[in-house]
Each structure stands twice: as C-alpha cells, then as structure tokens.
Image (cartoon, rainbow, N blue to C red; front, top):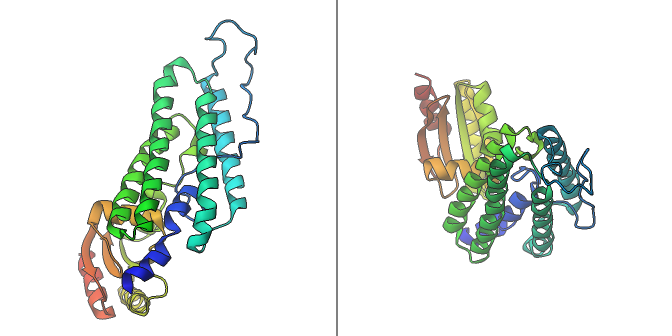
Length: 280
C-alpha cells in the first residue's frame, strides 16, 4: 500500500522536472515547433564567409536567453499534471518541446571561441532530458529507488549545463538546479535548518512534519518541509545523503551539510536536540 501511494504521488515528478513547472528543473525544455527560430542578429543571410555567419558572444547570449525565456511562458500553458493519465498526455508534448528547444539552440552559430562550450552545454541538457525520460519509465515500473537514482543523475547533467550557460551569460538557460531548491535558500538565512522529506496524504509523514516544525521552532532553527515531488531537493538529498524514503528528518548546519539524518518518524524533542547539537 505504501509503495502504491508513493507511485501515485511520484508518477508526475519526472514530467514536472521536464516541464520545469513549480520546481524549474530545466529552464529551457522547449518552445512550440511552429514558433520560428529567432534570426541571427546583424549577420548577412547570403554571406559566403562562414565566419561572418557566426554571432558575436553578445548576440548569441541574447538569442539563447530569448529561447529560454520564451520556453517558460509556453511551458506554463501546458498545465501541471496531477494524475498518471495527465502524465501520459503531457509527456509526449513535453519531450517534443525539449527537442525543439535543443534544435533551436544548436542552430545558433556561436563565436568560434565559444563553440566547444556551447556544444557541451547542449549535450548536458540533452542528457538531462534523456535520463529524466528513463526515470519516468522507472516510475511506471514502480521502481522508486531507480527513479531517485536516475533523477539525481539527471540533475548532475543539468547543473553541468547550467554552469556553462551561466559562464556564457545565458542566465535564462541556467536556472532550476539543485542550488535553487528551497533547502538551499533556507540555508542562506539560517545557520541550522531542519528539513523533512514527506509524502502528501500520509498521516505519519504529516505528523512528522508537524513535530519537526515544532522542534525546530523551540531552538530557533530554520525549517523546510520537502514534498517528494520537489525533484530538485530530492536530487540533492539522494546524491549526497542517500535518502530514498519518506518520512525522513535531516538537520543541516551551514557549510557542513546534514549532520544528522533520522529515517522515519521523529518527535519534537528529538528534533530539537539534534538541531541544538548542530549549532554547537
């Protein structure tokens, strides 16, 4: 029953990651195929010199950001899948958008000095889409552990692409990594943060959230409840702390990471003590 509940809850997750909805996993998963690709700025269309057909770094950055920003608007129109049936309808459209976006980015001619890095960026983002598709298949097979592992790998690829995009000035294409997770944001504001991974609809999980919130409040620690559908946070917890199930309580200390991991239910006294110890 527990695994069935998790499957029903988690099944939309891979698509959410591809869509970028709510959690912004992939900043540019695509634009509709009928939308024309932006034309290179300031380059003669009939030029015989291939070097003259290349964009300047500024032009490439502008057009890449235009593609990525446009995608976010188009993705929002798809709506957020809520059921397995929604997933089956949405996934093909999402993958089509992703392919279209990658084709458009490949069509841009970057400066020669940036070409290798741009190609590598596109390769990483393409890998993200491919692996998240495999993660979706793992969910259909009810293999939650495999899903978590694949999702973690997908985000590693995504963040490699993000770093290159950011270095090149394509900030619109570099959002949505694990560093953008709600947990990462909490750690910027609190020295100690209590994080709870929970499954919506589970009474034990929700009780753990309430107890952990109260325990964190007793010692003035930060607090965040992480829904299992938050793919970025899931990827972070899976890759660094081998968390594969909910509920789980993790106590983080800034710069040190998770200093205490409690699998299963934890009462407020236990959480408060763990958070107090983390502050020492």
